[in-house]
Amino acid sequence: MNRWRDRALFLALLAWVLLPVAMLAVRALAQSWRFPQILPAATDRLSALTLSTAAGDRLASALAMSITLAAATGLIGTILGFVIARSAAGSSQLFRRLTLAAAFFTVIAPPIALGVGLQVAMLGVGLGGTLVGVLLAHLVPATGYLTLFAVGVFSSLDSSLEDEARTLGASGWQVVSRVLVPLLRRRLGEALILGGLVSWGQVAITLLVGGGLVRTLPVELMSIVQSGDDRVAAIAALMLSVPPMLGIGLLTMGARRTGASV
Amino acid sequence: MTRSGLELRHVRVPFGDKAGLDDVTLQVPRGERVALLGPSGVGKTSLLRAIAGLGVLSSGAVVVDGRDVGSLPPERRGVVYMHQSPSLFPHVSVLDNVAFPLEVRGVTKRAARATALELLDRVRMGFAAARPPSTLSGGQRHRVALARALAAEPAVLLLDEPFASLDPELRAEVREAVIEILEHGNGPAVVLVTHDVDEAAGVADRLVVLLEGRVAQVGLPADLLASPRSVAVARFLGIPNLIRGMRDERGVVSCAIATFERPGAAGPVAVVVSAGMLRIRAGQRDGPAGTVTAVLHRVAGVAVRCDVGGESLLAVPEPGIDVAIGATVHVAVDTRALHVVDEPLDRG
Image (tube, rainbow over all chains, first blue to last red):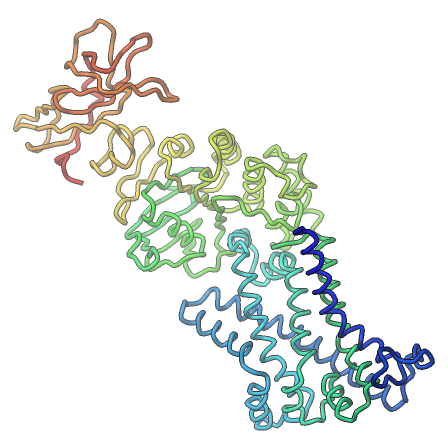
């Protein structure tokens, strides 16, 4: 009895998660889909992903911008998060608590509120409406997430490995490059993807700091939705949804293959 | 002149927020093994970490091979610190673990691996060179960790509770490995921390007893066990027979088991004697009479607790003697084995 109930619950959950994606996929493939049709007419279906050149260029450009920002945010955020977490681990309890509180604040603060503050700051230093300004702004919540993530990683890492490596003759840098990075390879990969995903979904911060000049995929999607072009919006939404799922899938596969754990 | 090795000069080490250890002065020449003994929380591990540069030193000097290393980072001190449970790097093979100290010093990978293989053979672990550390037993991990430590060619090797995490069988194996691998002569000065007095006495050339934040006594294991400097040291070492005594003006000491001469100031004293020196012999009535209160069956043999003149003493019956609780026995002692501590027993 319980087994059937569990299966039913699992299928319901799967449908709940996959239905919106399926609807997006159908909408992206159909030229038109009018109420009250349950599905698009056969002639409208599988019309191939033909887009006008202008729309295609817009999406391609936005996709490139999003990938650039996500990659840079993931990389820099991972470095910053791990460095901050490591410094906090070796410092006084007061400093450690303050660091964690600051990191936590960037995570719980509504992006719109964070964005307003960051907009003022970036305009003040002349980086408003620039890619660098948006990158720095994305790094604020990303570094917060990744600092909290790295604190967890370091708390489960056996510190005696570092101690022994140091007394065996390894410099601080050698400990990082020869012990910590190889040991934490999987965790660092996860952090890179997590940091990239924080950037990938940012709308409010990008709009406020980028001022509409830095057009990432979510920003472009908002614009397309407002213009009423459902089909292009569905394609953009799919483009926005697929990479995170691929990233998580790759991480899961990597973890299974290596059986790695810290 | 002392061979170079480790020298601590008036070292002061905090223990968390507490005072920790103070005024620790000690010399350990290369090739010697010294065990630090002391109750939990006295600061033994803090001292080791401070020597290695991993912990804080409030004052004093740590001198390694004649060089004050107090201001140097851990990697430049010539001191290797081994944790209680050997921390082998899980992401590389046993061979690369041992090659690690050589490679970080700039030795080529090929040469480092060749040397590492020699060291693994020396600790009889050459067969496991290609294996990951996770496949090794506890004793094998210790052997590999020792080989890795030797690869660093340290002047000083610090072993923090090296036997604590092992079961009794493995303890013996690792103890033998430590003695065998860290041979005297050109080897490093070895400082190990342990709670176990027997283990320390079995492995170390000298023992250092740390009590109440200070070095209470330093000496050869046999000397320390036979002649503790204070009642506190005797109690810490687990010497079972501490007997109240009184010395008169002529230097004659009287206690429950004997009257003997030991010059010194008149007054109450403590008489210390190990269980092995109090013998219960068949048919002999020399020595004071006592009543058996307990018969203890131990790995080392049978011991008998008996009440002699109001003192509860631990004695060893000679082989073949059958003693039972409540029986009257006579406890024989060679008064030369009795050690007198000039302090009343009730103190400490």
